[in-house]
Length: 362
Image 1 (cartoon, one colour):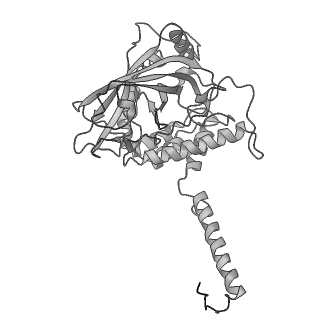
Image 2 (image 1 turned 180 degrees about the vertical axis):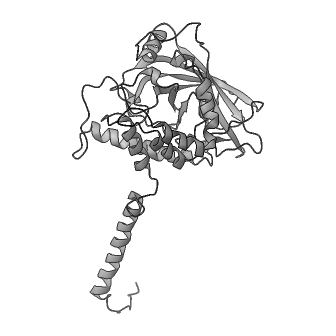
């Protein structure tokens, strides 16, 4: 075996120390940048979540948004109609187990149900090949803003005034005047009558995604879940009933499962995939892909739903994210919220201990 003839002396100790110092300095700068210490005005997931937390108050152990909700379980019955556009097994003629959570927005887990017209539904589909499809939706046809920066500005602009407990009309008005893309959402909020039940509302994914077929072709899509149940005439909460949504759902599930149709809309060329404030025209092709069946409610404090982060970028093969800038921002913010509440649940030193008792946990 040949023996190396390299007899060159090792690098000078001072040179080796310099290399180590440069590496450590570069690593420190990288950490500082990621943490936002070098660019304090840069929008980070931590700043977005802290802004939400400031608006609602701190409720340790709870999600920083959609803190009030109901965990549920059921399944999705695919009918095969969407399989021509996506290879995801959830769209085959098969049954896929589902865990979910209905909620209202805001970080206060004790907020009255009537404080907002917005309802939300998060779902996690457990596919047989170990993959997951997670989606987080709300009951509006469009989102209020189109960028993470605008969302954070909105959160700050609508922060409750300590003196009144309500947003400053002048500050909020200035924000909406400078963001005309909010007009479609505000028009919906002005005319929409809040549903009397989680079970009678529709839930839109809003952000665009791509379905990928067996040939690798990408199809831009949006999806929504349309309820089979309808509000009865005169239905609504009783006076001073602040928790009617969970009570109503519990009563419905005690007698029969609740059902929604999964409707997938295909975009036409030119339809925006990066702006959820803009609805696609109503004449676009829409596929009925199957039925979501919610069978029962689950405990809020120790069921699997408690530990689910409904990150909409967790997708199975056959679905990929679009160029919508809100999707990566939502993923990062959801992760930060998840870390905050789980650290509090674990009572890690340096974190705020979780409050007790806790009637529900998200």
